[in-house]
Amino acid sequence: MALVTFTNPEYRDKTVYAVAGSHTQTVLKLALENKIPINFECEDGECGTCLVKVSSIDDKHQRMGGPLTDKEKILLLELGKITKDQIETMHVDDLPTDWRMACQMIVRDEDIRVQY
Image (cartoon, rainbow, N blue to C red; front, side, top):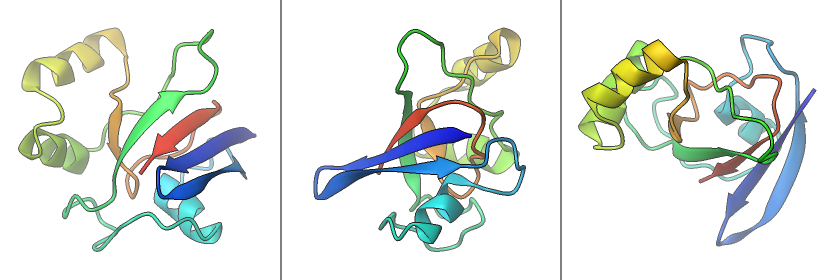
């Protein structure tokens, strides 16, 4: 199980358990199930309203993250959150990006902080 802490300056932090590697439980789905008020509209990775910043809670371990979906790559490029060079580096070095779309990011077996 993974611990996901949702944080926002307007709300108290909330930590929830996530089934890691379920391949169906996105950060947005987890937030909605736990009544965490992340903004969203399309739920399909096309509008950009569910943009979140993800970081590791355990600084001793490098965050794994999951691969960016094609929709995320396009949208994060349009929003100026990543560059084409960063995308290529992520593919080569298998490193995650801090910025994700909550509707696209699948929770993995790691404890993370999600700023929304």
